Image (cartoon, rainbow, N blue to C red; front, top):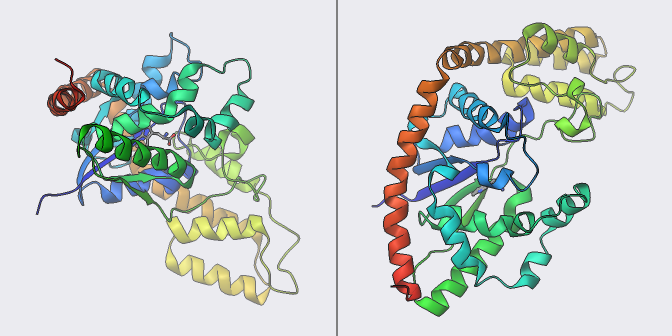
Amino acid sequence: MKQEILFSGIQPTGKIHLGNYLGAIKQWIDLQDKYNSLYCVVDLHALTISQDPQTYGQQILEVAMDIIALGLNPKKLFIQSHVPAHAELAWYFNTLTPMGEMARMTQYKDKAQKNANNVNVGLFDYPVLMAADILLYHATVVPVGQDQVQHLELTNILVKKFNNKYGTTFAEVKPYVTKAAKIMALNEPTKKMSKSLGDAYCLYLNDTEEIIRQKVSRAVTDSGPQMDGQMSEGVKNLFFLLELLGDKKVQTKLLTQYNDKTIKYSELKNAVADSVVNFLKPFWAARTRLSKNPKAVLKTLTDNGKRVAKIADKNLAEIKKKIGLI
Ligand code: TRP
């Protein structure tokens, strides 16, 4: 049986934190060998919010190095702008996309509100480019976070519209919504870990051991185990990190102490910091190795782009023929 094609993208918009890893990138890595997988640094998408041309190239490369150091096979990763067919297919899709569908997109409305001084056409068109990313390769498996599901619904609207008008070409895509771990901010444990809440409470993959320990030690907890046995959000979040990254025995011991009400939160925090640091150590080593030769990483990405572009161009030629272009 032919393997299904998987496509996913990540925007190069800044430093990656533990919430990004456990919430998304980990799934990419877990799925990479189960499908015929393509992973893309979507540098064209990130242009919909303003980027500094002096540093953008470096930012794109750093995200790629982070993902590779986390364990993604470097052969499966490429840069969106290296394959011009993405933007071209987006144009064909633009001519099939009802304005009304686009105006409903909650992420657009949200971003337009947050960037009121830069509401550009690209921001509005973002979901169409996303549909082009996926359908250019006839991908059907698309791992995304819950916030991207609406965009995939639009992709499926475009599948139907294209197929109706030009004949069956694309298959519907399946959102692979990761039952991913939702990590909360250390300072505001009712909110998702996010750099917008402040750097001091996000555990970045490239933080030093010292910084990680300091940030964890300052995490919000509570006055101690409660009479009703209900864990506060902050304590729950620490136990969750321990469950995901820590040693089972340590976790069981601390949980027993919590239930006995003999726990010291300083010990819980130490255990969490240890487990985060132990998890990050091999990442730091791999990342340092890659950073020593960024040119080699760029060469790999560029070569991958050339390989992928051959498939993209072949598929695009078939699509253009269906549209009636000569
Ligand atoms: N919009 C996605 C996000 O912000 C990134 C993305 C772009 C993407 N193109 C894609 C994800 C195609 C899946 C498939 O997370």
